[in-house]
Length: 540
Image (tube, rainbow, N blue to C red; front, top):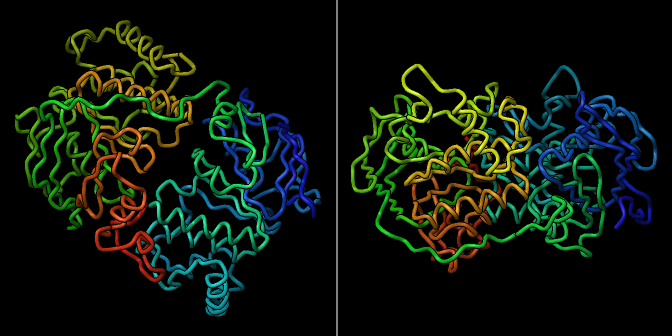
């Protein structure tokens, strides 16, 4: 393997030579060389903190390198800002879309690229160009639809159209399938192949090795700020790429024995929730979880999973109307008048979907975060007299067991990478040995080494006879970890499947609100002019 493969005939679209970037004492990129051949799909992978995002931010003009050279189409260029990058033919589709929700598709397309003071000529020209681009690249979308009324998949199309409208020949996509259904992801891949075949160059940043193998022509691997390999995708394997990313052998499959399910731990009957805007978020949820099993909730983010976790965790939206019944080990749990502390005392652990907003206080030290929610435990002292030395010692043990790096409990939570922040939250909840673990998006934004570790801990808890409710937008994760799978759409459970019997097409139909018994998998993707409501929008 070599970090500088030969460029294809016609020369590279992008060449980076000796790119370095430091933030204080942290060397984010170190002497990076990269060639991206024209008219190819090029994957860039690496662990959290490997320097991928920094490198792409330099290419798109968000950062300036400390040293090194950038060549576009063989010509050196100093990319001072994102406008310089756009003029050079570079477009970027971010993981969290940069769209104005109450603007139309057409208005978002021209925003920042207007022809003059009068909008009418710009809108007219954009409408005509949008029609051409949509037809040429399978990117059909209603130009007059409001962004807030579009599905996540259609919002992503708008971002791609926005870049193409600005005449991008190079397109950077950051984790583009994170909130897509399998059918939407397949459609995106068809679009990317079409763009490549038309001569566009695509850079794909993703942590999903399956996608790298399926869609890319070449792949580059970064580790600790350095480029460690660039290879043809056809000449490598997921196992080899994982080892290059982490620097050791990685188990890519979840090794777990068959579940030995016991008595019911959680029983949910007819659970309904209407938010303060009058929107019914949960529409009669029935769900059972037994001791010694993992029940996975599959679905596109925004279909009620968040509300389900919040209610079970004891902090529903203030003012929301709730109805139904929840039982823990046969005993009723109140829908209102309870809180997260009471839930924890009842034996429920909770790893929330958003670790930075709900799981951690980012400015507080790791040792303090490890104790949050359990700071009134007897071993930590009584009343206002907390035993800080005991809390620190407990944090050190948990951080050592969960391989939190760096293993310094005095560092603020914000000083850790996303994967290590997640380990802190998982350690806090799992080590309390809860009867029921609620875990939302356990590996969101987490690198492959940390994914392997977190999956092992979840399975260990199940094998200890505990019940686990897993919510994830990652279908591979749901299939690998779950003993039973329930699929949510628009606040309802569309159906249940056993992992061994489920197919991606079947689950994808259910995730799109389509009954696979009456609809073929090819029809799972919503039509181009459809723009479903809030249930299909992005992560909440």
